[in-house]
Every structure is written in C-alpha cells, then in structure tokens.
Length: 512
Image 1 (cartoon, helix red, strand yellow):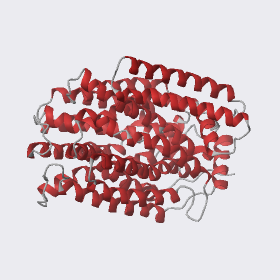
Image 2 (cartoon, rainbow, N blue to C red):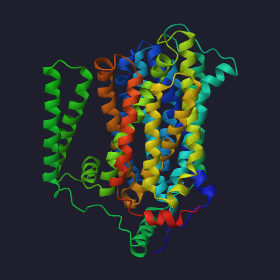
Image 3 (cartoon, rainbow, N blue to C red):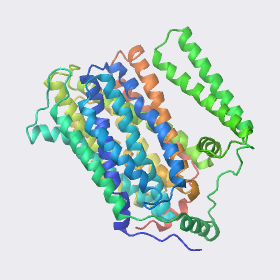
Image 4 (cartoon, rainbow, N blue to C red):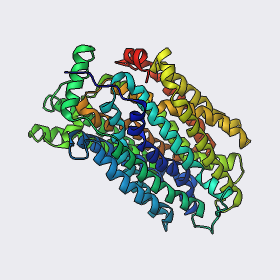
C-alpha cells in the first residue's frame, strides 16, 4: 500500500495538453455556430432551440463514456482509447460543419460535433482524478484551464485574423458561410487531432490495481473516506419509483399547462424532459426488481441516486453557472451586433465585423482565463477553494450585467476580463472539489453524471430563453445576457453550501 506519487510540471502539462485541441473545437463552436445558423436562415429567437443538440448530446454521451471508461483497460489504457475515438470523430465533424448546405444539416452537424467532442472531453476530467494526488488536483485542473483558455483564444480570433491579417474574405453571398469561418474550422479539426495525440503518446495510465492501492492509502493514512452511499439497486427500488413519479407528474403537468395556454412549443422540452426522466426511473426500478442489474443503464442510474453529498451540493452551483454561460454563448453575437453595432442583417459588412469582434472578445476572456488559471491554486491556498470560486462567480455575474450599459466595442473588453476570471474558476474549482469526494473506481461515471448539472441548465435555457425573448424581451438579445448575470450571482451565493471534503490537503500541499 503506497501513496499516489506527485507528478512533475511537465508530466501534468503533457496529460492536459489534449484540452488545447478540445477547447479549440468548443471555441469555434461557441463563437461561430450562431453565426452559421443565422447565415443559413435561422431566426434569432429560435437560436436556443437550434443549440439544443449540444446539451442533449452531452447529457446522453458523458455518463455512458464515463461508465465504460471506468471499466476499460486495454493496450492504450483506461481513458486514452476514448481520447482517440472522440478526436477522430470531432475532427471530421469540424471539417464538415462550415460546409453544411442548409440550416437543419448544420443543426445535425452540431449534434454530431458536440457528441464527438464530449467523447474526448469527459475522460480528461476523470484523468486528473486518476493521475494526481489530492494536493495536486487544483493544479491539474488549473493546467486544463490554461490549455482551454489558450486553445479558445486562438480559435475565437481565427476569423478575425484570417480577415484582417491574411486578407481572406469575411463576407459571402446571402446563405453562404464566409471563407474566414470555413478555414477556421479546417484548422480547428487539425489542431484537435494533433493535440489529443500528444497526450495519448506522452502519458501512461495507472492500472486499476494501482489506483485501488492509492485509494486505500488515502483512506487509511489520510483519513479520507471516498465512498458513496452503499445502497444496492434492490434497496433503491422505492427511491427509483418515488423520483420517477415526481418527475413524471411534473413533466405531464408542465406539458398540459403549455398545451392548455397555447404557449411556445419550446416549453414542451422541459415537460418532455421530466417525463422521459420519470419513465427511465420506472424502467430502472422494473429491471432491478427482475434482477436485471448487470448492465450500464441500471448501474448509471443507481450511481446517480447514490451520488455523494458534495456532488449534490455542487449541482446547484453548476445549475446557475451554466445557465448563465449558455445564455452568453447563444446570444452574445446577436446582442452585440444589435445593441452595439445596430444591425441584425447577417449579410451586411457591419454585422460580420461585429460577429468577428465577438470572436475576439471570446478570445480575450479565454486568454485571460489562461493567465488567471495558475493564480487560482495560490488564491485557494490562502483562502479556500470555495471562497475562490464564489468570488470568481460574483465577478462574472457583475460582468454579464455590465453588457447592458456599454455601447463601445472597445469597452466590452472590460467585462470579458471579468468573465475570463470566472471561466478559469468554473473549469477547475468545482472539479477539484468534486474529485475529493469520489472513489477511483467510479471517477469516470460520476464525472459523466456531474455533466447532468451542466447540460440540464443549458436545456432549460434553450427551452425558456427563446420564450422570454419573444414574450418579454421584445426580441432584444441583450436581456438574455442580463438574465445570465443574475443567474451567475445566484451561483456565487450557492457555493457556500458545499462541503469541500479534502480542502485541508489542497491548502497545505498544492505547491506544484
């Protein structure tokens, strides 16, 4: 029985390098997909619905990939086979996305592209938990934040650079994707694959036996219990029925209210989602009662009901945080082009100039997050991970709200720096807190389930923001960003209910 060894700076660098490519893909998606949708004829108040493909894909893919990566061990290792499969698929999707011939093909490609990126990304989160001891995990996730920020900077500003520095056309005929966007996606597909291959070939993984030995050391020597509530599937049958009944009844009631009052059809997504979840819970109960428990479906739902208390507490924080982020990714381009540049004509030069500036702003917040990332472990060591995260989210919330009073494109840089500070913490602190409460043999599964609390608020945002845009916001996207700011401030207050299990180790020893 021995302690998990500390890794050097360059070992942590190599194991995190693949995130450079992953975020390259996500940044191109976040900064340009709304632009592609609008160019292909998508209405601004329907953008949230078109974007639904992304969170729904993550909701399904990540727990499945996490569950099976926990159980995988072959010549490539435990997590690395999934790094490779996702990178190959995502690179192909990035090459095809800007060549979509119609709006609905682009929506379908977003589904494929996001699913492929998730196949690579989910195991990277568990990879940190696998490879690093408790005192280095804040540094490990901060390193991922650095590469996420760096990749996103380059990817976000690519259309601007190709236009202003290389003279590639930034305007195309109506209904056509500009060449700057096409070439950006081609570069992104190449970078994605190469960066992930770097991590695959420059790292090696601990075997399941070694991971078990390391966890036994922490349990006995460091007095840290990383166990989840040990109720079996059979013992949880009443909970499955109870949770399923609540979700099913709520889903049907919401759907009835939408139908009865002839509300926007997007609201059926909320009711339908709850209904489907309730049915899945009933299926889990029925399969368990028939002793059909040796399958991934039942195991994932059993683990979800058994999730650690820390994870449940972080769920609320993540909910408010990612509702805000999704509002930003969907509506920043239409908000800034209309509120600051004064146009919504997607074929005009000024609209495309504004859209390119949004890419630059996204690059700024991601670049600043890369710089801030290495300060976060220092701040956390002198305060706590909870205080660090709460302060970062509060700064982000105020920055969102400030968009409503800024009319100068250049001044928009200021709130983007605040969002960058929050983004660095969002990408590291919740995961550093969470991994301290998870057993190694379920690290991937719980990282995948944790993704529920990222994608569910995104699905909710996609369902209700379009409704609010038409019903209350008069089609003005800037109000969606204000709603995001309020949500992020609520996330900041929610941090204080979280129990950070191994915070004492992070404060004393995270000195990588």
